[in-house]
Length: 239
Ligand SMILES: [Zn+2]
Image (cartoon, rainbow, N blue to C red; front, side):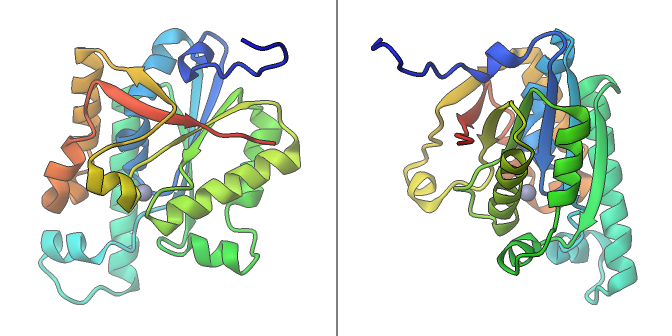
């Protein structure tokens, strides 16, 4: 190694007693799909975990039409669906963390976070900054800027912005749910880091994914593929 060369430590190095791990999830289900292994390892190691859910995932018409057998979805139905998805995420977190992880739901517009960012509106920034200032996470895990879902890209942008504006000294990692086309077509999930999950952790991650019953109706095959022995992350450069 050349002198002065930075050493990029693996996320696993920071999963230790006393660590505070903040996870940003644009929708209920991202906590299980993206970080279901990390949450288990963190709690087992004696770290604290907080998950900030940006939206309730209530703008989800096709699964809702299928599950509820209704065509028209208005505000009350949508709100009910969002509440149901919150409960699913809470059940999943309970399972992954033995009830030790805490969570907060911001209820911002599902499928509308990038529009907030592009309009220069605060969106989740105040809540992110409050979390960083008051809880002082040692690790912040956010969605990847490469994700195909606009809410994920915008959550990444807001999170990075909040870390920079609060000048919090922390490690930052990203997770990828909807692979960019270049990776999807090659069936390769590229990442700079990974956590190796045990068989038990894989099975519990699968059980947490299945807590999202509203999503399992139409996407069980795609969702269950996330319960592998490898959970991939990429280091996020803050500066
Ligand atoms: Zn998502």
